[in-house]
Length: 269
Image (cartoon, rainbow, N blue to C red):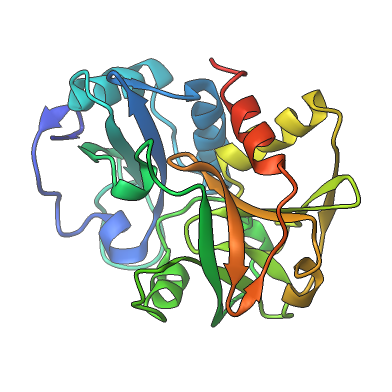
């Protein structure tokens, strides 16, 4: 089911700047019984991302109403897309009028089901993320780097691909944020040059604090995580998953995935 600007529809104006330039932002929500998990966190990130693009953010109550409407009481995925709307040709944003709101619901993918494996395989992608500090952390619509990185493999046994920036430092996964535990410290990449600062990443950092686990933001090459106590990825659909193997290297297990994953859901809003 889909709504565009509040109305049932399945198409947008071909001049929409989201289509032409990726000029917009989005959020992916896990819906439980037709209600979004972690809604306040998602709204806060959506408002921050809109501000980074100088994009007017619609009323949170309106977006919540539309997300619940398309979910129709189901356990599913809801995607919110906001674009700058339709405008004249050219890069200059100009006055496009109202933001385009696209809200859609799709079934939960198998990797988000309750019985999905909690330990996964990953690979290192060859694509390197370019540095753009102004957009660092923002979940904007231009995800071509992620698309090209995800096209690097077809093996269904590989769940995720890890990405480095142009300096060779770890950033995250094609669809996830990255964590590793080393000597009692929960580490995650700095995201001030590129990458997406996901809601689950923020919740995991808060959860670590409640668990008494120190946190640190680092710039590290892939070799640095091979000897970690545990390596994990996360997003709003899968929670925390342990990376059991990275390419041909087997990675450690220390029990932090279970503790952090449980703590993610203890801070319900």
